[in-house]
Length: 273
Image 1 (cartoon, helix red, strand yellow):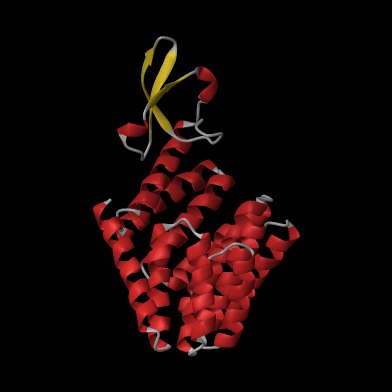
Image 2: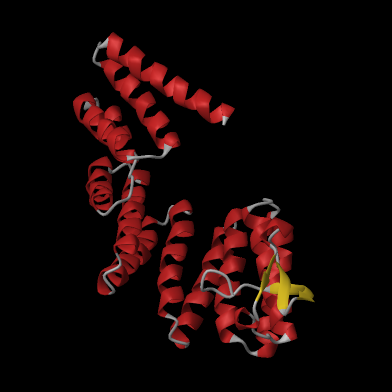
């Protein structure tokens, strides 16, 4: 156990009544020696299935080896199905969908995400079922089937409201804004981006849409608010760049130059750090 969550690990040695472990998929810098109360024995085949799932997720998310990740995660799925572990299947079906998503095979991504959702509903895993609604919506968006993408995203939003989870609500509202943005319904997109921003999401698109529409004063107000309220240096740099563009459009060349210089200095500091 690490930070109140269980992680698959291999025992390297026992020293001074402690177990020195290496966490699977993580490099040796994460290795540590722990007391027995932070260990629990797992079924060998289940451990192998989980190891394969974690390896596949790493191949897809970090190494960008999508086909190899897909092949690996299907081995994990086969084991989970053979041992009848439905909770494990919920997770790994999602990972298969994730691999297909990155291979731009959106039809198969939807199929596996939906299987994960249905199984999560069957075993009353509300957290996983809710997450799958968000996942299913994304490939529909890129297939251009906007009404289905919107349908699932609104279900995701409804569940967020039901359990009073503002993070879920903010993500759903932002994604609904994206759906309208893809349909070039910018007025609706801004409406949902604003609702998302009110719940804490950055909703960076709002300022960009103001710029596109020539509403430079509103864009400036939006990006100045971000600069004032964020500690993220990447976001600050991008916001100063946007401020420069909008001041330039208004003919306020000194302010445009000042913000562009600040953007350059922030970007330069990122390269040096």
